[in-house]
Each structure stands twice: as structure tokens, then as C-alpha cells.
Image (cartoon, rainbow, N blue to C red; front, side, top):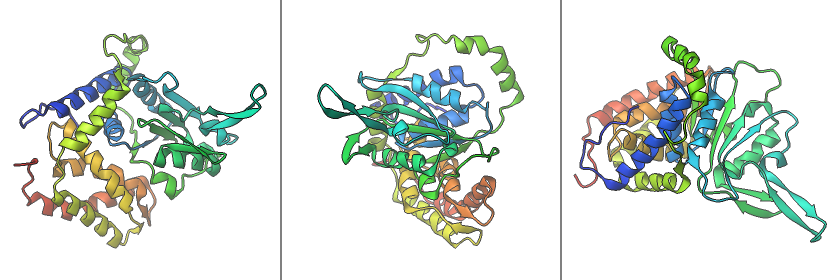
Length: 339
């Protein structure tokens, strides 16, 4: 994924959106080396109003990436933080995540004390190490952007983005995420080991990355991110052929004998803004088959319950079922709006 110059006539709102995301990308890249593809996918999810599950072994940069993204966005409300981290453990309580009611002896009333979900970027570190009850506490926040406590609903900010991490190789003391929880994540991203040169650069630049000058890549305002999201939604065209291709892929998955449970309709709905975001980052004002090829496997793989449950097998199944619909789409001429 690259930030190419627009190929069509410059669209001012789209160009402003791309500049906002380029600024975030530059700041994150200063602290995260060798993960450009992952950074771009996380940016797509941020713009698409989704959430991301990062999966790999400890020390692969998952937490660093989440913290860098949080530092790249400036909170505008004094009551909200740009970034909050929750270390998920077996003894964690739902109130440790959502907040709780505290009795105030001066007023004789209970007052709500917000939890760490009241932030723009929430890092749910090692999410599979806590109980299903705590995992479920995130469901309402991720799906509805609100928290309900004592029959009172507390809204979250419009810019609320969860980055969860888990280590698939360490299964001792873990609670696998249920299907309903997995379906709340737009992407599940495997962070493969970085290349030799990138790893050498990590070692060489450890001091410079620690002492990043904020003025070199200043954070962007929360409102700029929301404006970028709105601009991409309004100005990146999605042809009906793209919708048909999405449905064709879903039907192919449901008919595949390797698949016990295929992707939901919700996943197709969530995929559309992700495709728009990817197209905008590539400099286009319309979604193409290239966006489907780049994004759709990451949307579908973790939602597929296959006979062979390995993530790699699910990703292969998703790509296989995309082949024929994409070939049909390739024979369709896709253009931007009004062309």
C-alpha cells in the first residue's frame, strides 16, 4: 500500500484527508520500523471506523505501534485522553475497563468515574488473557460507542478506536475470543517477523526513535481525523459491481466445503468503508479490484470458522473464494463518480 499522487482531478476534501493520514503515518513510522504494511492497514481501519486485532509473539512491536498511533492524534476535549492502555489479566473486572459508580459522601450520591475506554485510542493488551465477562464488557463499547452502567448510558467519543493484541503461541491461562467478539474487529493482522535490514535499523535507531522530536511530525487533531473519515465516505465512489463482488465472495465461502461458518453480512458492510479508505490512500476516488485484493482477506479470514482452524488456512480459503468473483469484476469497467 502506498501514498501515490492522485491520478484523477484533484479533489480538495480527499486530498486533505490523505494529507492528514500521511501525517499520522509519518509520525508512527518514526517509532515503528519495518511495519509499513501493518501501519497502513491500521490507518485504513481508523478511517473506516473499525477496530484491529494484532496477533503475534511478544516483542514484535504490537504495543509500540498502538502507543505511537495514540501519540499521533491530539485530543481536543480535556476530559478525554488520546491514548489509554489496559493490561488484560485473569483477575481484571469489567469496571476496570468501562468505569464504575463511586459514592460521594459530600453529595450523598453516586458519581460515575469513567474507565480507560473513554479515550480516542484504547490498547487492549493481551485481550485473550482475561475472562469472557471482561471481554464482553468491550462489546457494547466497540459496537455502539457507549457504556451502560446502573441503567445509565454513557456515550463514548465519535473517534473511538480499539487496538487489541494477543499472542497465539502462548495458550496457558488464555480465553479464546468468541465469534461475536472477533466479529467486532474489522481486521485481524498477523505481524510476521520483520526483515534483516529492518531489524538492523531497529537496533541502530533505538536512541533516535526514543527521542523523536514532536515538531518533526506533529500530532493531528481529533477533528481532522473525523473530517478525513467523512470526506472519504462522501467522495470515494463504490460501484454496484463492487457490492456484487462482495456478495459473490460471501456466497462462495458459504458454499465451500472447507468452511463451517462463513463471514457475516456485517463483515461485508464493514468492508465497504475499509475499501473506500484504501482507495483514497492509493490516490483514487473510486474503489477498484485492487482494493478488494488488498483488504478483503484481512476482513474475512478471522471470521471464517474452517474445518482446519489455522489462520493461514482461513486466509487461503478467503483468497480462493475471491478468485472467480474478482475475475468477473475485472471484466467490468470501473470509473469514478460521474464518469
